[in-house]
Figure 1 (cartoon, rainbow, N blue to C red):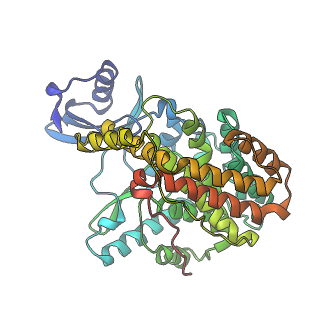
Figure 2 (figure 1 turned 120 degrees about the vertical axis):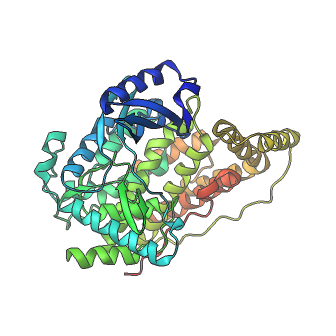
Figure 3 (figure 1 turned 30 degrees about the horizontal axis):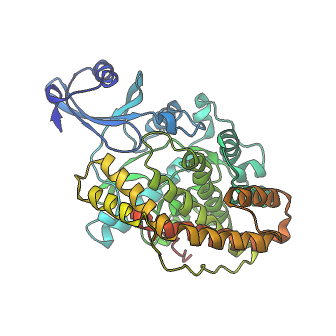
Length: 447
C-alpha cells in the first residue's frame, strides 16, 4: 500500500479521503485501489498512535442493479453488529463519491485456501452457526430499514424475486426467452408449504476467516426477509465461482444446531430463483455494454448462472439433458488478426484493464472460429421447436419469447432441454475467457 503523498488521486477520491478522515477521526496515510468492477479502496488511517485498516466500498454506478441501494447494505450491517454477529464496524456513509466507510477486518476469503480439511470444516461449521444466529434475529430489529415482512407463504417463497423481475423488465433491451421461461416456471411453482420468514443474507457464503474461525461476514447488499432455505441456495450459487467443496456437512450442521431439517426441494427452488437473478441483472448489460464493462466476465455470469437453473429445472419437469455436438473450429480471413490481438494482449502487463481486453479478444477469437456454425445449429433447433426456421438470431429470440409467454406446463421439459443446449453452445464460445467459471457445476447434496 502506497503512502498517500505518492498517490495521484482523482478529485472524487480526494474528497473521499477528507470524509474518511472526518468519520474515523484520524489521518489517511496510505491507500490502494481495489481493482474490481466496483470502485473501492483499501486505506490506512493513523489515529492516536495506532493504524486503523479501513475499507471504502463504493457504489456500482452504471452497473447498479436498481434493487437495493448501498445504504441498505450499511443498515443491515449495523443491525447485525448490534446483534453481536461478526461484521465490519461501520464508520459512516460518504455521499460524494458514494460509499460505505467500514472497518477492514483480518482474514482471507476462499475456503479452498484453508490449511487443511479440518480447518475448512471448522470454518464452514462456524459460518453455519452465524447463519443460524442471523435467521433467529427478531424481524422487528429491521423495521428501521423499511423492509416489509412477507404476508403469506407465497410471498415467503418468492422472496425478493418480484423486485428483481421489475428491475429486469425496466432494463430489458432485447428478447430474453430463457429468462422469461424460467421466470414463468418460478411463479407457477412457488413452494407454498414454507411458512417461516427470517432475515437472510441472500448472496450468502461471503466471509473471511482466520485460525479456523470466521472473522467477518461480507457483502450483505442483497439481504432480505424470506425463507431460510434461500441462504443454502445462495451458497450453492456462490460455490460455482468460489468453491466451498462439499456443502452437505455444513447444511447438516445447521439442521443439527437449529432443529430445522433441510428442505431439499425448497433449496433447489431457491437455487433456480437466485441463479436466475444474475442473468436478469447482467443480460441487459451484455446486450449493451457500458464503457469499462468486463464483458467476458459478465457474459460468463450470464451463461453459467442461467445454465444452473435449467439443470435443476430438468429434475422438476422430467427433462433429459443432452449436450450439443460441437463442430470443430474453423478459420476465416480474419483469424490471423484475432490471433495477433490475443498474443499481444497476453504478453502485456497484468493490469486489470489489460486483462479485461484480453478476455474480450479471446472471446472474439472463438466466435470467429465457431460462432457461425453454432448459430446455424441454434436456428435449426429453434425451427424444429417452432415449426418454422427463423431468419436470424433476433427473429429467433423474438419468436421464442412469444412462444414461451404463451406456452403451458406441457412445454416445460422441451424448453428446458433446448435452452440447456443453447447455453452450452454459447459457453463453448466463451470458454477461453471464462477463467474460474470454466468448469462450474453444482455439487451433489448428500443429505
